[in-house]
Amino acid sequence: MTPRVRAELRRTGGFRDRSLRVVLDSATLPRDQAAQLARLVEQIDLTRVGAEIGAASDADLTRYQLAVEYGGRHWRGTVAEPCVPEELRPLLRFLTSAAR
Image (cartoon, one colour):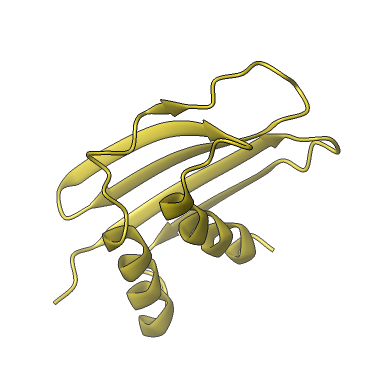
């Protein structure tokens, strides 16, 4: 059985300030989406990814505040373009698309 996953994303900034907020919980998602969320989180080494990446203060930068709970572990961090680690991008895309 896959551990419960909860992910919260807040996107701010950017040239057009396309802000959004989304919270997904595998306990309330359809089975296929819950499995995909779990796979995406499992692919990220949250112990290696820092909590503050790309801390430049340019207002035109898109910032992502991300909180992840998975299998009793909690991770919270802020990343900004263009310094988003490649391993976070699939999860950010998944969460962003779920907010539409």
